[in-house]
Image (cartoon, rainbow over all chains, first blue to last red; front, side, top):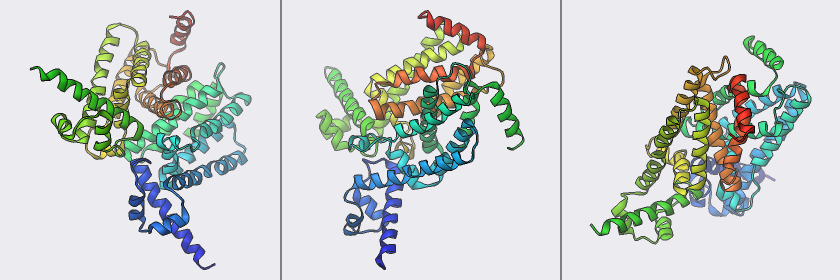
Length: 209
Length: 209
């Protein structure tokens, strides 16, 4: 099928153009004609790939969402403790969000009230679930301070990721998102992890580990 | 001047209608004609009050921003320690954001990339500044754990407020913003405050104080 690769290129160019406009303006402000203008694709070619603007938004969100189970699996395979897995995997996620327009747009669309109003499933609960699994594992591994509630910690982490994303997007075009999260971990960990874990962590960090 | 009160009512109804649409859709997606339709005001009457859509957005943001110095002043006058002032004043701010469409829209507009692109001043730095002043005062009052950096704490707090606002807006229409922030304080404080302060705080909270 000689047309397959060309169709794939068209689909990809629609998604990249739409992603950069959704990321910049939000879902409601981006018209289909703006997207078509940006990628130089005809309306007919567009409808060959996507039945509607919301279907295109869903494809961008799916493409972003598909990254996280794979990322989680790779970090689980490394056999690190749950807190190191949590910090390592989320740092990599933040790097991926900062560097790729489709990932960025997927994250932004999943918090867009208009996208929610359309009936597409919100992404927050998934992130909160991923984070909760790791913080609960840290609890069973004995890495959390006494009295720390894993579900509350996961919700706060989720808020810190969302808030720093929004701030970094508005102020620096994502340039300092990774740095802001590094800073956030330094503030959050002393309230979450045991002294023993923190001492090991700081020694390893000071040694560049 | 008998027309003054009526003009004031018109101006207010434009601002409320615009605020609820900006809050729902973001700045770029809301056309002037949608705003006029929502408040039932003619184009001529609109231009009597505001020269442009961005001037209207600026007025909404100003109205929101004007609340915080007054709120801060009132909490300072109570003579509480810096951490209690910080928690009390920010909790009240979160309640005000949750309950008032103009305040809500002001906060949302101040993080809107299109509003930033127009050259209006971002609000993040102001919040970060307000928070930094209080956390630095807590440091001089000896309320912070050794090794805690007040500027880093203020940036994380700012991210938690922004993130929980975004999450509460998307998932519950702000209904659980206050509850999410209460939860966040329980997770954050053990990493920030001294054991002595925390013990007093928990005793007072348990006693309903």
